[in-house]
Image (cartoon, rainbow, N blue to C red; front, side, top):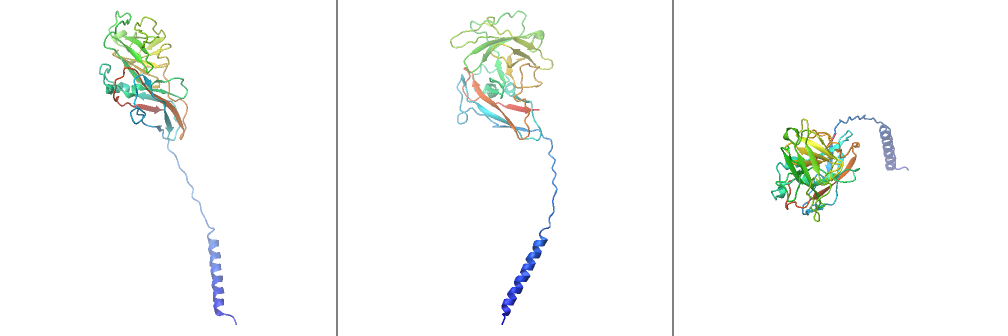
Length: 302
């Protein structure tokens, strides 16, 4: 005799199997979504790290007459278009609005003026933007050459961390300023240092320095093929009170064309890629103790 209960179970299993089979057939249905995205043309870079602090507890404070360890800075293309022709400006000119040489106060000096940088292809470091100021008086045993007919004149030291100091002179030209035609700049080939007094600009000056007059700018520009500033640009202030040494300012409108100016990076950096350059702090002997004025290095790409 068959059990009615077993019959009920068999019937239930059959119905359940049918339902599962029916659901499986229906689940095969699908559809698609078409996606299209347009990326806007955006030029953008970031520089990492975005600060360098040669102070106690960070990169370490600096002794006069020393160079720091090398710091690497990375330029990242975070935009959507290629960037190239990367150049750099330093805040030194705006930071040092007056001659700091007689203040004995570190805060009168721009930190940017103590930074040197090098791109991937250069063999040596160049100033990010350094000012050398006019000395207040003629030095003991100094000879600056003929000053007849010169209405404005300045002289000073080009200093670096090596302890070598090179005497330079700047003499006004047409119009009595140091950015116009006829301006002359000279710098010693041989330095003064602890063992050698060298203050006669007429004895072995650099002879390969040529001047480019300003037009609408307030700075003239000198380039030298010999001497300690080979490969860099030397901007001469209209007022004859200072010179400004730089290299990576590119096609900036502040100065006349300089044959020695260069880009910090000239090759293309595609979106998502990066390029590197290096920086050091270089502190000449005779720099006063304390915190310098915070400087800014502005990295630009076109």
